[in-house]
Length: 274
Length: 358
Image (cartoon, rainbow over all chains, first blue to last red; front, top):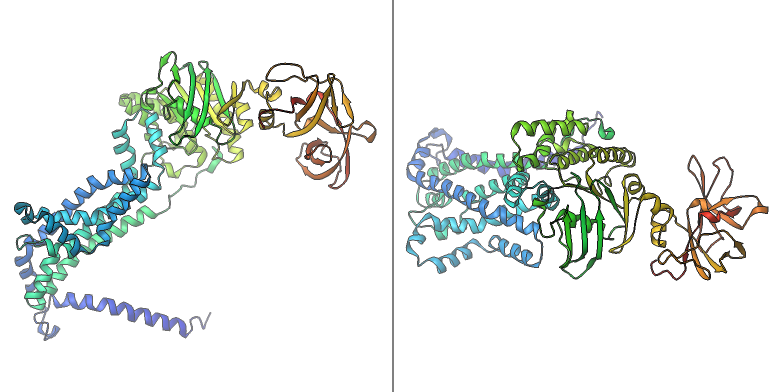
Protein backbone atom coordinates (compact mmCIF):
# COMPACT_ATOMS: atom_id res chain seq x y z
CA UNK A 1 0.00 0.00 0.00
CA UNK A 2 2.68 2.48 -0.92
CA UNK A 3 0.52 4.28 -3.41
CA UNK A 4 -2.33 4.03 -0.90
CA UNK A 5 -4.66 6.85 -1.57
CA UNK A 6 -5.37 8.09 -5.03
CA UNK A 7 -6.54 11.51 -6.16
CA UNK A 8 -10.17 10.62 -5.44
CA UNK A 9 -9.43 10.42 -1.75
CA UNK A 10 -7.77 13.80 -1.71
CA UNK A 11 -10.55 15.31 -3.79
CA UNK A 12 -13.12 14.09 -1.29
CA UNK A 13 -11.06 15.21 1.65
CA UNK A 14 -10.66 18.65 0.08
CA UNK A 15 -14.39 18.96 -0.54
CA UNK A 16 -15.17 17.91 3.03
CA UNK A 17 -12.77 20.46 4.46
CA UNK A 18 -14.14 23.23 2.26
CA UNK A 19 -17.70 22.40 3.30
CA UNK A 20 -16.74 22.29 6.98
CA UNK A 21 -15.02 25.63 6.70
CA UNK A 22 -18.03 27.07 4.91
CA UNK A 23 -20.11 26.21 7.96
CA UNK A 24 -17.54 26.82 10.69
CA UNK A 25 -16.08 30.17 9.54
CA UNK A 26 -19.27 32.19 10.14
CA UNK A 27 -19.45 30.73 13.65
CA UNK A 28 -15.88 31.74 14.36
CA UNK A 29 -16.35 35.13 12.68
CA UNK A 30 -19.45 35.81 14.70
CA UNK A 31 -17.76 34.82 17.94
CA UNK A 32 -14.73 36.93 17.11
CA UNK A 33 -16.90 39.89 16.20
CA UNK A 34 -18.32 39.76 19.71
CA UNK A 35 -14.90 40.36 21.25
CA UNK A 36 -13.44 42.74 18.68
CA UNK A 37 -13.13 46.45 19.55
CA UNK A 38 -14.32 47.55 16.13
CA UNK A 39 -15.57 44.95 13.73
CA UNK A 40 -15.22 47.18 10.67
CA UNK A 41 -11.54 47.77 11.34
CA UNK A 42 -11.05 44.07 12.03
CA UNK A 43 -8.94 42.27 14.61
CA UNK A 44 -6.20 44.92 14.35
CA UNK A 45 -8.43 47.15 16.45
CA UNK A 46 -7.84 44.77 19.35
CA UNK A 47 -9.84 42.37 21.53
CA UNK A 48 -12.18 43.34 24.35
CA UNK A 49 -14.80 41.90 26.71
CA UNK A 50 -16.60 45.21 26.77
CA UNK A 51 -19.43 44.09 24.49
CA UNK A 52 -20.06 41.00 26.52
CA UNK A 53 -20.50 43.05 29.67
CA UNK A 54 -22.70 45.48 27.82
CA UNK A 55 -24.96 42.69 26.63
CA UNK A 56 -25.12 41.32 30.12
CA UNK A 57 -26.11 44.72 31.49
CA UNK A 58 -28.80 45.18 28.85
CA UNK A 59 -30.19 41.69 28.52
CA UNK A 60 -29.40 39.75 31.72
CA UNK A 61 -33.11 39.76 32.59
CA UNK A 62 -34.04 38.24 29.21
CA UNK A 63 -31.38 35.56 29.53
CA UNK A 64 -32.41 34.63 33.06
CA UNK A 65 -36.06 34.68 32.02
CA UNK A 66 -35.31 32.31 29.15
CA UNK A 67 -33.58 29.88 31.48
CA UNK A 68 -36.50 30.12 33.88
CA UNK A 69 -39.06 29.52 31.15
CA UNK A 70 -37.11 26.57 29.81
CA UNK A 71 -36.98 24.96 33.26
CA UNK A 72 -40.68 25.61 33.87
CA UNK A 73 -41.38 24.23 30.40
CA UNK A 74 -39.37 21.14 31.27
CA UNK A 75 -41.32 20.61 34.50
CA UNK A 76 -44.67 20.94 32.74
CA UNK A 77 -43.71 18.64 29.87
CA UNK A 78 -42.36 16.07 32.35
CA UNK A 79 -45.49 16.03 34.47
CA UNK A 80 -47.77 15.97 31.45
CA UNK A 81 -45.62 14.15 28.91
CA UNK A 82 -44.45 11.05 30.79
CA UNK A 83 -47.93 9.88 31.82
CA UNK A 84 -49.19 10.81 28.37
CA UNK A 85 -46.52 8.68 26.70
CA UNK A 86 -47.42 5.85 29.08
CA UNK A 87 -51.08 5.95 28.10
CA UNK A 88 -50.27 6.17 24.38
CA UNK A 89 -48.04 3.09 24.53
CA UNK A 90 -50.08 1.08 27.02
CA UNK A 91 -53.47 1.60 25.42
CA UNK A 92 -52.90 1.63 21.68
CA UNK A 93 -56.04 2.25 19.67
CA UNK A 94 -57.66 4.57 17.17
CA UNK A 95 -58.35 7.23 19.76
CA UNK A 96 -54.82 7.36 21.16
CA UNK A 97 -53.46 7.34 17.61
CA UNK A 98 -55.60 10.35 16.75
CA UNK A 99 -54.49 12.08 19.93
CA UNK A 100 -50.86 11.50 19.06
CA UNK A 101 -51.39 13.16 15.68
CA UNK A 102 -53.09 16.11 17.33
CA UNK A 103 -50.23 16.40 19.75
CA UNK A 104 -47.73 16.66 16.92
CA UNK A 105 -49.72 19.35 15.12
CA UNK A 106 -48.02 22.32 16.88
CA UNK A 107 -44.70 21.15 15.44
CA UNK A 108 -46.02 21.18 11.89
CA UNK A 109 -48.03 24.40 12.12
CA UNK A 110 -45.93 27.58 11.72
CA UNK A 111 -45.13 29.06 15.11
CA UNK A 112 -46.61 32.36 14.02
CA UNK A 113 -50.01 30.76 13.37
CA UNK A 114 -49.92 29.05 16.74
CA UNK A 115 -49.03 32.31 18.45
CA UNK A 116 -51.79 34.12 16.61
CA UNK A 117 -54.32 31.54 17.80
CA UNK A 118 -53.15 32.00 21.38
CA UNK A 119 -53.34 35.79 21.05
CA UNK A 120 -56.85 35.70 19.60
CA UNK A 121 -58.07 33.35 22.29
CA UNK A 122 -56.30 34.61 25.41
CA UNK A 123 -55.22 38.11 24.35
CA UNK A 124 -58.06 39.56 26.40
CA UNK A 125 -56.84 38.11 29.70
CA UNK A 126 -54.55 41.03 30.53
CA UNK A 127 -52.62 39.64 33.47
CA UNK A 128 -52.02 36.31 31.77
CA UNK A 129 -51.20 37.94 28.42
CA UNK A 130 -48.57 40.12 30.06
CA UNK A 131 -46.88 37.48 32.17
CA UNK A 132 -44.16 35.03 31.19
CA UNK A 133 -46.75 32.28 31.65
CA UNK A 134 -48.19 33.26 28.28
CA UNK A 135 -44.88 32.46 26.63
CA UNK A 136 -44.59 29.29 28.67
CA UNK A 137 -47.94 28.13 27.25
CA UNK A 138 -46.62 28.49 23.72
CA UNK A 139 -43.39 26.71 24.57
CA UNK A 140 -45.21 23.79 26.21
CA UNK A 141 -47.47 23.36 23.18
CA UNK A 142 -44.45 23.35 20.93
CA UNK A 143 -42.14 21.09 22.99
CA UNK A 144 -44.60 18.57 24.49
CA UNK A 145 -44.64 16.34 21.41
CA UNK A 146 -40.85 16.03 21.57
CA UNK A 147 -41.01 14.85 25.17
CA UNK A 148 -43.89 12.44 24.49
CA UNK A 149 -42.27 10.95 21.40
CA UNK A 150 -38.94 10.47 23.04
CA UNK A 151 -40.41 8.81 26.16
CA UNK A 152 -42.90 6.74 24.17
CA UNK A 153 -40.15 5.34 21.95
CA UNK A 154 -38.28 3.96 24.97
CA UNK A 155 -41.47 2.73 26.61
CA UNK A 156 -42.56 0.93 23.45
CA UNK A 157 -39.26 -0.94 23.40
CA UNK A 158 -39.40 -2.25 26.96
CA UNK A 159 -42.43 -4.60 27.15
CA UNK A 160 -44.14 -2.56 29.86
CA UNK A 161 -47.10 -4.90 30.04
CA UNK A 162 -45.10 -7.89 31.22
CA UNK A 163 -42.93 -5.78 33.53
CA UNK A 164 -46.06 -4.40 35.15
CA UNK A 165 -47.62 -7.83 35.43
CA UNK A 166 -44.47 -9.07 37.11
CA UNK A 167 -44.52 -6.19 39.58
CA UNK A 168 -48.25 -6.61 40.19
CA UNK A 169 -47.83 -10.32 40.94
CA UNK A 170 -45.39 -9.27 43.66
CA UNK A 171 -48.08 -7.08 45.20
CA UNK A 172 -47.18 -3.66 43.78
CA UNK A 173 -50.13 -1.32 43.09
CA UNK A 174 -50.31 1.04 40.13
CA UNK A 175 -48.37 4.02 41.51
CA UNK A 176 -45.68 1.85 42.94
CA UNK A 177 -45.27 0.12 39.58
CA UNK A 178 -45.30 3.42 37.72
CA UNK A 179 -42.65 5.16 39.82
CA UNK A 180 -40.65 2.09 40.79
CA UNK A 181 -40.48 0.22 37.51
CA UNK A 182 -41.84 2.19 34.55
CA UNK A 183 -40.26 5.61 35.15
CA UNK A 184 -36.75 4.33 36.05
CA UNK A 185 -36.71 2.13 32.96
CA UNK A 186 -37.91 4.96 30.73
CA UNK A 187 -35.07 7.16 32.00
CA UNK A 188 -33.05 7.27 28.76
CA UNK A 189 -36.12 8.57 26.92
CA UNK A 190 -36.99 11.01 29.67
CA UNK A 191 -33.44 12.40 29.70
CA UNK A 192 -33.26 12.73 25.94
CA UNK A 193 -36.70 14.36 25.91
CA UNK A 194 -35.75 16.71 28.74
CA UNK A 195 -32.64 17.99 27.00
CA UNK A 196 -34.57 18.40 23.79
CA UNK A 197 -37.29 20.42 25.54
CA UNK A 198 -34.79 22.67 27.34
CA UNK A 199 -32.76 23.45 24.23
CA UNK A 200 -35.86 23.99 22.08
CA UNK A 201 -37.38 26.28 24.67
CA UNK A 202 -34.21 28.34 25.09
CA UNK A 203 -33.84 28.78 21.34
CA UNK A 204 -37.51 29.24 20.43
CA UNK A 205 -38.05 32.46 18.44
CA UNK A 206 -41.08 32.17 16.11
CA UNK A 207 -43.76 31.81 18.73
CA UNK A 208 -42.02 33.86 21.35
CA UNK A 209 -41.52 36.83 19.09
CA UNK A 210 -45.31 37.03 18.61
CA UNK A 211 -46.16 36.36 22.25
CA UNK A 212 -43.64 38.56 24.06
CA UNK A 213 -44.17 41.98 25.53
CA UNK A 214 -41.34 44.48 26.17
CA UNK A 215 -41.26 43.11 29.71
CA UNK A 216 -41.23 39.43 28.77
CA UNK A 217 -38.40 39.31 26.25
CA UNK A 218 -36.53 36.02 26.03
CA UNK A 219 -32.98 35.32 24.99
CA UNK A 220 -33.58 34.87 21.22
CA UNK A 221 -36.00 37.80 21.13
CA UNK A 222 -33.34 39.91 22.85
CA UNK A 223 -30.85 38.74 20.26
CA UNK A 224 -33.08 39.92 17.41
CA UNK A 225 -33.51 43.19 19.25
CA UNK A 226 -29.78 43.59 19.67
CA UNK A 227 -29.03 42.90 16.01
CA UNK A 228 -31.77 45.22 14.85
CA UNK A 229 -31.07 48.20 17.04
CA UNK A 230 -27.46 48.10 18.23
CA UNK A 231 -23.85 47.81 17.10
CA UNK A 232 -22.97 44.58 15.29
CA UNK A 233 -20.43 43.83 18.06
CA UNK A 234 -23.20 43.73 20.65
CA UNK A 235 -25.29 41.34 18.62
CA UNK A 236 -22.24 39.14 18.11
CA UNK A 237 -21.37 39.21 21.77
CA UNK A 238 -24.92 38.14 22.44
CA UNK A 239 -24.46 35.18 20.11
CA UNK A 240 -21.34 34.25 22.02
CA UNK A 241 -23.27 34.13 25.28
CA UNK A 242 -25.92 32.03 23.58
CA UNK A 243 -23.24 29.58 22.45
CA UNK A 244 -21.80 29.31 25.91
CA UNK A 245 -25.25 28.43 27.25
CA UNK A 246 -26.42 26.07 24.56
CA UNK A 247 -23.30 24.15 23.50
CA UNK A 248 -22.77 22.36 26.83
CA UNK A 249 -26.46 21.39 26.72
CA UNK A 250 -26.10 19.95 23.24
CA UNK A 251 -23.01 18.01 24.25
CA UNK A 252 -24.82 16.64 27.29
CA UNK A 253 -27.73 15.64 25.08
CA UNK A 254 -25.41 13.74 22.76
CA UNK A 255 -23.73 12.01 25.69
CA UNK A 256 -27.07 10.85 27.09
CA UNK A 257 -28.25 9.66 23.72
CA UNK A 258 -25.07 7.60 23.45
CA UNK A 259 -25.58 5.97 26.85
CA UNK A 260 -29.08 5.02 25.88
CA UNK A 261 -27.97 3.54 22.57
CA UNK A 262 -25.00 1.54 23.83
CA UNK A 263 -25.63 -2.21 23.64
CA UNK A 264 -25.96 -3.87 27.03
CA UNK A 265 -22.56 -4.74 28.31
CA UNK A 266 -22.14 -8.33 29.23
CA UNK A 267 -19.42 -9.75 31.39
CA UNK A 268 -17.83 -12.86 30.11
CA UNK A 269 -19.98 -15.18 32.18
CA UNK A 270 -19.97 -18.93 31.94
CA UNK A 271 -22.80 -18.22 29.49
CA UNK A 272 -25.70 -20.59 29.82
CA UNK A 273 -23.93 -23.26 31.78
CA UNK A 274 -25.89 -22.39 34.89
CA UNK B 1 -48.07 -22.74 50.84
CA UNK B 2 -50.21 -25.67 49.78
CA UNK B 3 -53.23 -23.79 48.56
CA UNK B 4 -56.06 -25.69 46.98
CA UNK B 5 -57.42 -23.97 43.87
CA UNK B 6 -60.84 -24.47 42.37
CA UNK B 7 -62.15 -23.01 39.16
CA UNK B 8 -65.86 -23.48 38.73
CA UNK B 9 -67.80 -22.83 35.55
CA UNK B 10 -65.13 -20.43 34.29
CA UNK B 11 -65.38 -19.24 30.71
CA UNK B 12 -63.63 -16.43 28.91
CA UNK B 13 -64.95 -14.30 26.11
CA UNK B 14 -62.72 -11.43 25.04
CA UNK B 15 -63.98 -7.92 24.41
CA UNK B 16 -64.03 -8.50 20.66
CA UNK B 17 -66.36 -11.46 21.12
CA UNK B 18 -63.78 -14.21 20.66
CA UNK B 19 -64.46 -17.15 22.90
CA UNK B 20 -61.11 -18.11 24.39
CA UNK B 21 -62.44 -20.68 26.83
CA UNK B 22 -65.62 -22.69 27.02
CA UNK B 23 -66.97 -23.08 30.58
CA UNK B 24 -64.88 -25.56 32.51
CA UNK B 25 -64.20 -26.83 36.02
CA UNK B 26 -60.73 -27.52 37.35
CA UNK B 27 -59.58 -28.53 40.80
CA UNK B 28 -55.98 -28.32 41.83
CA UNK B 29 -55.05 -30.06 45.06
CA UNK B 30 -52.81 -28.27 47.53
CA UNK B 31 -49.15 -28.91 46.74
CA UNK B 32 -49.88 -30.40 43.36
CA UNK B 33 -48.18 -29.43 40.10
CA UNK B 34 -50.66 -29.20 37.27
CA UNK B 35 -49.39 -28.70 33.73
CA UNK B 36 -51.61 -27.05 31.14
CA UNK B 37 -50.56 -28.52 27.81
CA UNK B 38 -51.70 -27.63 24.33
CA UNK B 39 -50.84 -25.93 21.07
CA UNK B 40 -50.75 -22.15 20.88
CA UNK B 41 -54.15 -20.52 21.02
CA UNK B 42 -55.75 -23.39 22.95
CA UNK B 43 -56.52 -21.25 25.99
CA UNK B 44 -53.92 -22.63 28.39
CA UNK B 45 -52.35 -19.27 29.10
CA UNK B 46 -55.78 -17.71 29.61
CA UNK B 47 -56.47 -20.22 32.40
CA UNK B 48 -53.14 -19.38 34.02
CA UNK B 49 -53.88 -15.66 33.79
CA UNK B 50 -57.29 -16.24 35.33
CA UNK B 51 -55.72 -17.95 38.31
CA UNK B 52 -53.21 -15.10 38.52
CA UNK B 53 -55.87 -12.40 38.42
CA UNK B 54 -54.66 -10.92 35.13
CA UNK B 55 -57.85 -12.04 33.39
CA UNK B 56 -61.28 -12.43 34.89
CA UNK B 57 -63.77 -15.16 34.00
CA UNK B 58 -67.10 -14.30 32.39
CA UNK B 59 -70.03 -13.78 34.75
CA UNK B 60 -70.92 -16.99 36.55
CA UNK B 61 -67.36 -18.24 36.86
CA UNK B 62 -65.86 -18.65 40.30
CA UNK B 63 -62.29 -19.09 41.48
CA UNK B 64 -61.40 -20.04 45.04
CA UNK B 65 -58.08 -20.37 46.87
CA UNK B 66 -58.56 -22.66 49.88
CA UNK B 67 -62.25 -21.85 49.78
CA UNK B 68 -61.75 -18.04 49.70
CA UNK B 69 -63.51 -16.52 46.73
CA UNK B 70 -60.84 -14.62 44.80
CA UNK B 71 -62.78 -14.34 41.53
CA UNK B 72 -62.81 -10.52 41.48
CA UNK B 73 -59.61 -10.00 43.42
CA UNK B 74 -56.83 -8.23 41.54
CA UNK B 75 -53.44 -9.83 41.08
CA UNK B 76 -51.80 -7.57 43.67
CA UNK B 77 -53.97 -9.06 46.40
CA UNK B 78 -53.83 -12.71 45.39
CA UNK B 79 -50.28 -13.48 46.46
CA UNK B 80 -49.33 -15.47 43.41
CA UNK B 81 -45.78 -15.98 42.19
CA UNK B 82 -45.41 -15.57 38.46
CA UNK B 83 -42.63 -16.65 36.13
CA UNK B 84 -42.86 -15.43 32.54
CA UNK B 85 -41.38 -16.68 29.30
CA UNK B 86 -39.79 -13.26 28.81
CA UNK B 87 -38.55 -13.21 32.45
CA UNK B 88 -40.09 -9.75 33.18
CA UNK B 89 -37.14 -8.83 35.39
CA UNK B 90 -36.72 -5.15 36.24
CA UNK B 91 -33.74 -3.88 34.22
CA UNK B 92 -33.29 -0.91 36.54
CA UNK B 93 -32.49 -3.16 39.49
CA UNK B 94 -29.70 -5.58 40.31
CA UNK B 95 -30.33 -9.30 40.78
CA UNK B 96 -30.64 -8.92 44.57
CA UNK B 97 -32.92 -5.88 44.24
CA UNK B 98 -35.17 -7.80 41.88
CA UNK B 99 -35.56 -10.59 44.41
CA UNK B 100 -36.06 -8.09 47.23
CA UNK B 101 -38.73 -6.11 45.38
CA UNK B 102 -41.72 -8.20 46.42
CA UNK B 103 -40.51 -8.37 50.01
CA UNK B 104 -40.19 -4.59 50.08
CA UNK B 105 -43.71 -4.21 48.71
CA UNK B 106 -44.97 -6.53 51.43
CA UNK B 107 -43.21 -4.46 54.06
CA UNK B 108 -40.68 -7.06 55.17
CA UNK B 109 -38.01 -5.39 57.35
CA UNK B 110 -34.52 -4.83 56.05
CA UNK B 111 -32.70 -7.55 58.01
CA UNK B 112 -35.21 -10.24 57.24
CA UNK B 113 -35.35 -9.09 53.65
CA UNK B 114 -31.59 -9.38 53.19
CA UNK B 115 -31.57 -12.80 54.81
CA UNK B 116 -34.36 -14.07 52.62
CA UNK B 117 -32.83 -12.69 49.43
CA UNK B 118 -29.55 -14.44 50.26
CA UNK B 119 -31.36 -17.70 50.97
CA UNK B 120 -33.29 -17.49 47.69
CA UNK B 121 -30.19 -16.74 45.64
CA UNK B 122 -28.36 -19.64 47.27
CA UNK B 123 -31.24 -21.97 46.61
CA UNK B 124 -31.18 -21.02 42.93
CA UNK B 125 -27.34 -21.22 42.83
CA UNK B 126 -26.97 -17.61 41.76
CA UNK B 127 -25.65 -16.08 44.99
CA UNK B 128 -22.49 -14.98 43.17
CA UNK B 129 -24.61 -12.91 40.77
CA UNK B 130 -26.33 -10.85 43.48
CA UNK B 131 -24.91 -7.48 42.40
CA UNK B 132 -25.08 -8.05 38.66
CA UNK B 133 -27.26 -5.97 36.39
CA UNK B 134 -29.97 -7.93 34.60
CA UNK B 135 -28.52 -7.22 31.15
CA UNK B 136 -25.31 -8.94 32.23
CA UNK B 137 -27.07 -12.28 32.69
CA UNK B 138 -27.64 -15.16 30.31
CA UNK B 139 -31.13 -16.49 29.64
CA UNK B 140 -30.78 -19.37 32.10
CA UNK B 141 -29.50 -17.06 34.81
CA UNK B 142 -32.37 -14.65 34.21
CA UNK B 143 -34.96 -17.37 34.62
CA UNK B 144 -33.31 -18.41 37.89
CA UNK B 145 -33.58 -14.85 39.15
CA UNK B 146 -37.24 -14.78 38.08
CA UNK B 147 -37.90 -17.99 40.01
CA UNK B 148 -36.12 -16.68 43.10
CA UNK B 149 -38.09 -13.43 42.89
CA UNK B 150 -41.42 -15.26 42.58
CA UNK B 151 -40.74 -17.69 45.42
CA UNK B 152 -39.27 -15.08 47.79
CA UNK B 153 -42.69 -13.68 48.72
CA UNK B 154 -43.94 -17.15 49.69
CA UNK B 155 -46.86 -17.08 47.27
CA UNK B 156 -49.96 -19.22 47.69
CA UNK B 157 -49.45 -20.61 44.22
CA UNK B 158 -46.59 -20.52 41.72
CA UNK B 159 -47.64 -19.82 38.14
CA UNK B 160 -45.18 -20.54 35.35
CA UNK B 161 -45.96 -19.41 31.81
CA UNK B 162 -43.70 -21.30 29.38
CA UNK B 163 -40.66 -20.43 31.49
CA UNK B 164 -38.23 -22.54 29.48
CA UNK B 165 -39.39 -21.80 25.95
CA UNK B 166 -36.85 -19.04 25.33
CA UNK B 167 -33.90 -21.24 26.34
CA UNK B 168 -31.85 -23.63 24.24
CA UNK B 169 -32.61 -27.34 24.32
CA UNK B 170 -29.84 -28.54 26.60
CA UNK B 171 -30.39 -25.85 29.20
CA UNK B 172 -34.11 -26.43 29.03
CA UNK B 173 -33.73 -30.03 30.16
CA UNK B 174 -31.36 -29.02 32.93
CA UNK B 175 -33.49 -26.23 34.33
CA UNK B 176 -36.56 -28.44 33.99
CA UNK B 177 -35.00 -31.04 36.26
CA UNK B 178 -34.12 -28.32 38.71
CA UNK B 179 -37.59 -26.78 38.70
CA UNK B 180 -39.00 -30.25 39.30
CA UNK B 181 -36.76 -30.67 42.36
CA UNK B 182 -37.69 -27.20 43.58
CA UNK B 183 -41.44 -27.80 43.30
CA UNK B 184 -41.14 -31.09 45.23
CA UNK B 185 -38.95 -29.52 47.88
CA UNK B 186 -41.21 -26.53 48.44
CA UNK B 187 -44.39 -28.58 48.14
CA UNK B 188 -46.01 -25.49 46.68
CA UNK B 189 -49.12 -25.59 44.51
CA UNK B 190 -47.96 -24.89 40.98
CA UNK B 191 -49.55 -24.39 37.59
CA UNK B 192 -47.25 -24.72 34.63
CA UNK B 193 -48.10 -23.81 31.05
CA UNK B 194 -46.25 -25.39 28.16
CA UNK B 195 -46.71 -26.64 24.61
CA UNK B 196 -43.94 -29.19 25.09
CA UNK B 197 -45.21 -32.68 25.79
CA UNK B 198 -41.93 -33.85 27.27
CA UNK B 199 -41.80 -30.93 29.69
CA UNK B 200 -45.38 -31.61 30.73
CA UNK B 201 -44.65 -35.28 31.41
CA UNK B 202 -41.49 -34.50 33.36
CA UNK B 203 -43.07 -31.90 35.66
CA UNK B 204 -46.74 -32.60 36.04
CA UNK B 205 -48.45 -34.57 38.78
CA UNK B 206 -51.36 -34.15 36.44
CA UNK B 207 -51.60 -32.85 32.91
CA UNK B 208 -54.52 -30.92 31.49
CA UNK B 209 -54.50 -31.22 27.70
CA UNK B 210 -56.24 -28.29 26.07
CA UNK B 211 -57.74 -28.05 22.62
CA UNK B 212 -59.41 -24.98 21.11
CA UNK B 213 -60.57 -23.50 24.42
CA UNK B 214 -61.72 -26.80 25.88
CA UNK B 215 -60.17 -29.31 28.22
CA UNK B 216 -59.52 -32.39 26.07
CA UNK B 217 -58.27 -34.63 28.87
CA UNK B 218 -57.05 -34.47 32.47
CA UNK B 219 -54.83 -37.23 33.77
CA UNK B 220 -51.47 -38.31 35.13
CA UNK B 221 -48.63 -38.32 32.62
CA UNK B 222 -49.00 -42.10 32.38
CA UNK B 223 -52.71 -41.91 31.60
CA UNK B 224 -52.24 -39.20 29.03
CA UNK B 225 -49.45 -41.10 27.35
CA UNK B 226 -50.92 -44.59 27.45
CA UNK B 227 -54.64 -43.92 27.29
CA UNK B 228 -55.28 -40.80 25.27
CA UNK B 229 -59.02 -40.23 25.11
CA UNK B 230 -59.18 -38.59 21.73
CA UNK B 231 -57.24 -38.61 18.48
CA UNK B 232 -56.20 -35.04 19.28
CA UNK B 233 -54.59 -36.02 22.58
CA UNK B 234 -53.00 -39.09 21.03
CA UNK B 235 -51.53 -36.99 18.27
CA UNK B 236 -50.40 -34.26 20.65
CA UNK B 237 -48.56 -36.60 23.01
CA UNK B 238 -46.60 -38.13 20.18
CA UNK B 239 -48.68 -40.92 18.67
CA UNK B 240 -48.49 -39.27 15.30
CA UNK B 241 -48.90 -42.38 13.13
CA UNK B 242 -52.33 -43.06 11.80
CA UNK B 243 -53.96 -45.96 9.98
CA UNK B 244 -57.57 -46.57 9.03
CA UNK B 245 -59.25 -49.84 9.95
CA UNK B 246 -62.56 -51.65 10.34
CA UNK B 247 -64.02 -53.52 13.29
CA UNK B 248 -65.99 -56.64 12.40
CA UNK B 249 -67.44 -58.63 15.27
CA UNK B 250 -64.80 -57.39 17.67
CA UNK B 251 -61.92 -58.10 15.36
CA UNK B 252 -59.77 -55.42 13.80
CA UNK B 253 -59.28 -55.41 10.06
CA UNK B 254 -56.54 -53.32 8.51
CA UNK B 255 -56.62 -53.76 4.79
CA UNK B 256 -56.48 -57.53 4.23
CA UNK B 257 -55.09 -58.34 7.67
CA UNK B 258 -57.13 -59.28 10.72
CA UNK B 259 -56.06 -58.82 14.34
CA UNK B 260 -57.65 -60.45 17.33
CA UNK B 261 -56.45 -59.01 20.56
CA UNK B 262 -57.08 -55.30 20.58
CA UNK B 263 -58.61 -53.05 23.19
CA UNK B 264 -61.15 -51.21 21.17
CA UNK B 265 -63.43 -49.04 23.22
CA UNK B 266 -64.93 -45.68 22.57
CA UNK B 267 -63.05 -43.45 25.02
CA UNK B 268 -65.89 -41.02 25.38
CA UNK B 269 -68.54 -43.54 26.30
CA UNK B 270 -66.45 -46.47 27.42
CA UNK B 271 -68.33 -48.76 25.07
CA UNK B 272 -66.60 -51.56 23.29
CA UNK B 273 -66.46 -50.88 19.59
CA UNK B 274 -67.69 -53.97 17.82
CA UNK B 275 -68.47 -52.75 14.38
CA UNK B 276 -67.60 -49.93 12.07
CA UNK B 277 -64.71 -47.92 10.76
CA UNK B 278 -61.96 -46.96 13.19
CA UNK B 279 -58.87 -44.78 13.29
CA UNK B 280 -55.71 -46.23 14.76
CA UNK B 281 -53.14 -43.98 16.42
CA UNK B 282 -49.73 -45.23 17.43
CA UNK B 283 -46.12 -44.26 18.06
CA UNK B 284 -43.12 -45.62 16.17
CA UNK B 285 -43.33 -48.80 18.27
CA UNK B 286 -46.73 -49.72 16.80
CA UNK B 287 -44.95 -51.20 13.80
CA UNK B 288 -41.65 -53.03 13.60
CA UNK B 289 -39.59 -54.24 10.69
CA UNK B 290 -39.45 -58.00 10.07
CA UNK B 291 -38.76 -60.74 7.53
CA UNK B 292 -41.01 -60.94 4.49
CA UNK B 293 -42.70 -64.09 5.84
CA UNK B 294 -43.95 -62.46 9.07
CA UNK B 295 -44.97 -59.22 7.45
CA UNK B 296 -48.41 -57.67 7.71
CA UNK B 297 -47.51 -54.96 5.28
CA UNK B 298 -44.82 -54.07 2.85
CA UNK B 299 -44.07 -50.42 2.32
CA UNK B 300 -41.42 -48.29 0.75
CA UNK B 301 -38.76 -46.41 2.70
CA UNK B 302 -39.07 -42.72 1.90
CA UNK B 303 -36.44 -41.36 4.27
CA UNK B 304 -33.95 -42.66 6.82
CA UNK B 305 -32.64 -40.74 9.84
CA UNK B 306 -29.92 -42.08 12.08
CA UNK B 307 -30.76 -41.07 15.67
CA UNK B 308 -27.93 -42.90 17.42
CA UNK B 309 -29.91 -45.31 19.57
CA UNK B 310 -32.23 -46.14 16.69
CA UNK B 311 -32.76 -45.80 12.98
CA UNK B 312 -35.95 -43.92 12.10
CA UNK B 313 -37.70 -44.78 8.85
CA UNK B 314 -40.45 -42.88 7.10
CA UNK B 315 -42.47 -45.53 5.30
CA UNK B 316 -45.12 -44.95 2.65
CA UNK B 317 -47.59 -47.34 1.12
CA UNK B 318 -49.05 -48.73 4.35
CA UNK B 319 -51.70 -46.17 5.22
CA UNK B 320 -52.95 -43.13 3.41
CA UNK B 321 -50.14 -41.12 5.00
CA UNK B 322 -46.50 -42.11 5.56
CA UNK B 323 -45.80 -43.68 8.98
CA UNK B 324 -42.74 -43.59 11.21
CA UNK B 325 -41.10 -46.94 12.06
CA UNK B 326 -38.00 -47.39 14.24
CA UNK B 327 -35.46 -50.12 13.70
CA UNK B 328 -32.08 -51.25 15.03
CA UNK B 329 -29.43 -48.58 14.49
CA UNK B 330 -27.03 -51.08 12.92
CA UNK B 331 -29.49 -52.05 10.18
CA UNK B 332 -28.44 -50.89 6.76
CA UNK B 333 -31.50 -49.61 4.96
CA UNK B 334 -31.54 -46.99 2.29
CA UNK B 335 -34.31 -44.80 0.98
CA UNK B 336 -36.25 -46.16 -1.95
CA UNK B 337 -36.04 -49.82 -0.88
CA UNK B 338 -39.07 -51.91 0.16
CA UNK B 339 -39.50 -52.72 3.87
CA UNK B 340 -41.60 -55.40 5.61
CA UNK B 341 -43.51 -54.44 8.75
CA UNK B 342 -45.40 -56.26 11.45
CA UNK B 343 -48.18 -54.64 13.50
CA UNK B 344 -47.86 -54.69 17.30
CA UNK B 345 -51.58 -54.64 17.91
CA UNK B 346 -51.29 -53.94 21.65
CA UNK B 347 -49.60 -50.63 20.87
CA UNK B 348 -52.50 -49.29 18.86
CA UNK B 349 -55.06 -46.88 20.23
CA UNK B 350 -58.38 -47.37 18.53
CA UNK B 351 -60.90 -44.58 18.03
CA UNK B 352 -64.20 -44.68 16.17
CA UNK B 353 -63.56 -43.12 12.78
CA UNK B 354 -66.38 -40.60 12.97
CA UNK B 355 -64.59 -38.79 15.77
CA UNK B 356 -65.91 -35.27 16.21
CA UNK B 357 -62.53 -33.76 16.93
CA UNK B 358 -59.76 -33.82 14.47
